[in-house]
Length: 104
Image (cartoon, rainbow, N blue to C red):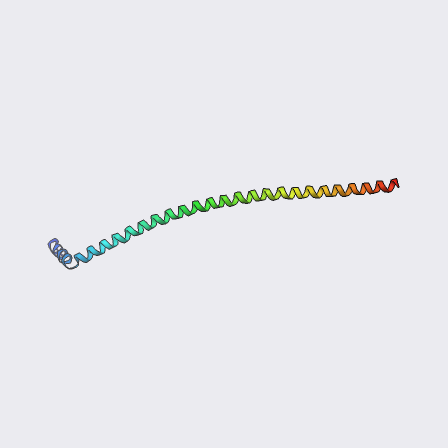
């Protein structure tokens, strides 16, 4: 096995040959890692914002549907009442007709 002095000599030679390239790669990897971390944080923030917006939209739509449903029920009830009044009117007219025939 190589001695420590030989290893340190090899390390020094390696630094002379590849030192600047290794430093450049390290700097580039750090830059890429930083960009990835920033993008991840931004994506998480965007996801939360989209979820909040979706929840607000869902509440707004649900509220509007509920209001429309109530309005529809009111209008159907009003129509039913009008039809009931027509039925009452028809019965009254029949009764009036029958009374007129009886009095003749």
